[in-house]
Length: 577
Image (cartoon, rainbow, N blue to C red; front, side, top):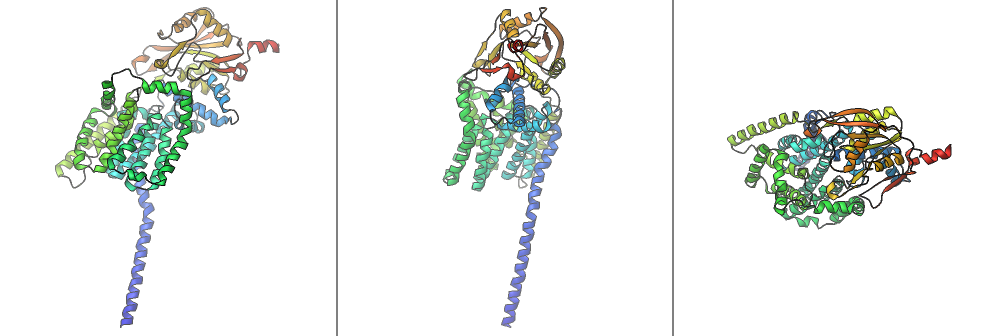
């Protein structure tokens, strides 16, 4: 009997083992499905948002803050660099390219990550307004994906769903999701880095720490403002009292990754652009008290008053209802952005787009109440939440970003009139015309002169210089550089006197008005604005051998022989004859 029992007991054990193994196998086999199910929610959320984010994506040209045109032109340069791959002479290639199309501030002044992505998109799909905006939208999708995963990690998929919709359609995010600026690419990479940092603090594992070091490097190579993440790490570690997490070898390796990835660019930036950097850091045109209040005053315009009011309530109640850990995460996020951007002298509202996700977090999480709260509180939260989402979607659907249109036809007409030539340009957002001229100039036979009359160091506050003053100076320039086409705006200029001298000279018989082009825009600055294309009837080969482009951001000017630009100067033609 005992043996039987033993056998029976052993048999039962074997059966139990089979059952346990079967359960384990079912659990393991279900994991991929569970992971796929979790991936489905952020994917569906983003797909719901895309019709709004892509609405009117092809409307208008580049316009926002002048920088937008520079970002688009720099993406063109990267696409050409990848296509031509001048491995043996990249610097000479860049100089020649800049002389043709002088709109490459992004090559050094801004980090390379966005331009690399934009250049690849241009290479695959062609350079256009639409593909430039798609490049930004690609970063937006990545940022929203990780924002969903982050909020889901600290709360739930319900909270993440609402938080992602509200963030994507908030006023400032929506504007820059539809604009070729660095705000969304930079904010997106900062969200990705924050996801891995918070995951590291929660899970205390090396995997997330290494991923943080890599993604924070990419963030700092997307825009310099991402340096606030250093303070974010400091404040969050201090708040959680978890400095002991850094007492490991993986911390040293992570720091080495950051230094190796970001070091070369920042060394190059400081060696070539230190005076410009110092000007931005130390710029002070407001009092110390105004500097402290500047970014708090900007918050209502970034998120809207209704969401800000709810966020303030959420910020107060978070100490009673929310977890201490989550409070520290998102309060550290807001504080780090505010402190870092306040310390930087140059200020613009858009520079604190980085703390908008954290502010909106405090507006959303209290509304998606857990089931153990009072019934009337849950009902009130749901009603308010529905109103917030509905008003956000309605406002986003009717949103129109600033746009301008009218530069592309000028480039097309110049190309129809000839297959080469030197173009003098004096108008607002000149890089807009340069972008379209590059698209028309497939063989690199045109040269655009944007800095022949005067030059500005990034912005006028950092310095400017006027090179020509009289009609004789202008005639000499026309002759030496062989200028055939001149594009000017109709608006009386007031920055440099030579601009008015040029317009008076264009009224003389030496120049023929080819056509006037109305420029349309949805802001008052473009009212009654137009461009005029003139042809120099006395144009001939350049009398000079070299074309010199003045550079205020370098320690030397750029000098390139005309023959390397595909233009034969007069002296060479005489010798050939």
